[in-house]
View 1 (spheres, helix red, strand yellow):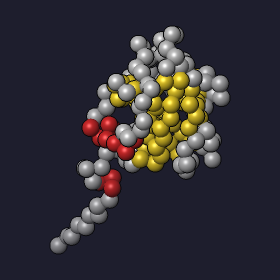
View 2: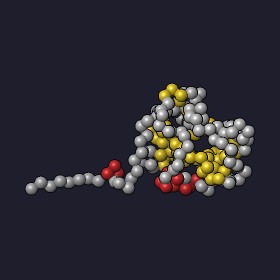
View 3: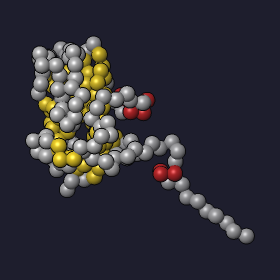
Length: 168
């Protein structure tokens, strides 16, 4: 008689989402691409329920005095991607809007691991063509950064993600 024992762990649990964070766009300190992939990272996305739920705790952010730009640049690596990547402590995000946009938008950002577990969350404001800095308190490793742009009239009007790599 043969008895098989099987253990159950998180990777075997079908309710746990697993995402691929292995493929990274690489950017230098000035935001110039070193390695770019034709995989849709850093471009406009439609989020599924699990992805949009990552932002639930950030949806209390103050959206007063914000507006929706006429357009958002969807051309990485010029805009919308975080750099440098890989990064040590801090990385930046610059989002391109139509050239005459001078109002503010709210950036809501969530960093997750490969099991879609949130490791860092941040809310900041972008004014006009300015950028924002992220200084996530996460250990070295590969992650996915989800972010949305929101305004008072249009929460989460732009959604995207890209894989990031924090080095030691």
